[in-house]
Image (tube, rainbow, N blue to C red; front, side, top):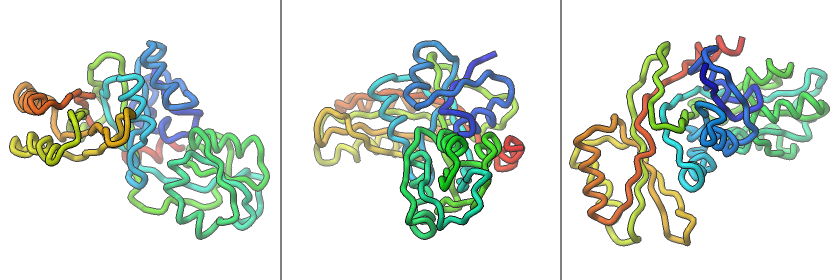
Length: 293
């Protein structure tokens, strides 16, 4: 049985992604931080790691991207998209209303996803950032009082918390992309789930900042009619103005188009790295409900 690491403790959306993908066919192991999970895959302590990489409201999870690029370059072997519903969780002994909440605990991304709700309804509360939404729920469970956590229904069930207010995220279409990492570059197929296509993610580093550089990079894909679903710049951490680009291409790596792109970009002086070509999966709301029971 494969071992799969995730950002824990129990009750996180990452654990939900693991359960949605693999159900009870793997042994799951929780880690306190995203880097700890990635390190465990690199050291061979676990077979696979699942980490968040992008949220529909707050964008990329830069900690994941930067750690994979600058610290531990593991291949991406699968992707799962999970619908996100954030709830305001309190200790079962709490009998007040939102005006009495003094502190709100959650992951920085979760708090950002609920910024307007907090601003309009709980402006008096101090915000405390935790390593995950599951960790926030655990804090409220242990400490009680006038504390609240932002997290999911699974966390509420896991720690016996009460949902004071459901769906406190600011935008209804809230989804998070999770990637599955593996030490060896070999795609993970999930037999019980239907693929939603295949994606290839590459990193492109420009030789220097000059007029039209990005246009030339994009043209290599454009004239080959390769659809890009995402392009994002991130700092190289070598000085101001030095960036690399993460590009998602909506097709599987092949022996014709991608080598052509790589050769064209390398001729321009760019460095090109394939971060993974992998199947995409969607974990439905119905499956999430069944997991929360």
